[in-house]
Image (cartoon, rainbow, N blue to C red):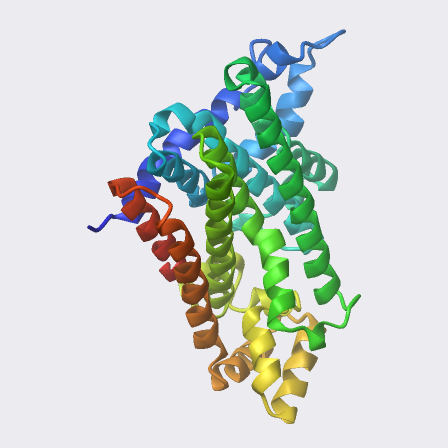
Length: 358
């Protein structure tokens, strides 16, 4: 059985966007759900909220994005025997949080472009971008508040627990990533396990959050919740590895980010870099470290670094590694899920994310 995952993502994206709009309106009014669940005591300052929140948030969300985390969320609900249409409002949680992290990441990385346009802080200023990004960590929880009676205390408490755990993990992963590429910790001695833990914390977190919340909502037992979380985490890690690969090799991908090798400019220690530093001769190892520490935007220097990584087969190594971790985690989940079209869709979806070209 085969599925056109690209068409599924295209079909799901506008559904997710409408659900986001329900809770984070493009233009806030006094009827907005946020004011329904928490009415202001003194005044509605709609103009300020629209200018400093709604406008920058939607300018960013309208740039696109694959919306793969909420799609994963809905496929898991379906694979557990539920009607995914009943869970669309909750699927916005990991997606809005993800976009908030990107807005903040761009500030932390001093990035110039995101999805082919100037970063939010470049357009609106640091103050608005920081506040909007942080607000995106909490606004998507409104569906939980709005539906708290229907969900019940026990399920609601478990979902909040998952959310808090994963948001802490997200910050731990970002701390590791920042420390390494800023030279606050000895990044030249990193091994694969450290890199994978950073990815599990950072990129794996929101995929894991999506899967675990979906599983709890769909009444899965705790073993299946954890197994699906681990599977989604492996997808998230593999997705990050593929991002790292595309940063060095993908023309269209690189064009949107401002040229090949943005991770080199940031001095990031990716799996590709770690593998190269492990197997390269002393001369190449020294030169790659030199270029990474320059934080250069010179394309010639970035291409030199890419050539060194290609010389040792590190890009292909990373691609194979990504496939392997997804295949291994799928085996754990496969035996626990009933046979269904949705189960096959879930497997096909994971494979698509690690083979994508953009």
